[in-house]
Length: 126
Image 1 (cartoon, one colour):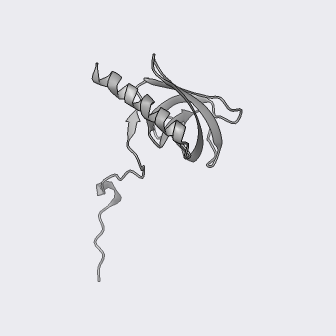
Image 2: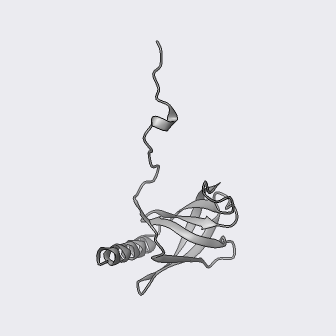
Image 3: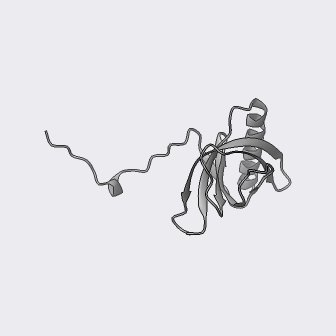
């Protein structure tokens, strides 16, 4: 029996994320507060279960770090996160993209919800 598979370029993109992400347009700032946190260039996106960072150096998977997230005149959230993956940016050879996940932290889950809701409300008023 002959297999009929589409070329990779014709296959639809499928997200592996468990929750949707809000693409950050400089609305949320992030700062590492633990010694092993990466030097952050920018926050690419954030969601209820994780976020993606742009950094100058690769981040090893399973790296644990603590971060502060802040929205302009909005809530400030401090949370632990674990790096899940890291790869070189396709657009810039000097930038690494790392995906981070928030471990189960009930109080942090609520705080991230409030932060993302605040940003979404702010966007809807523009």
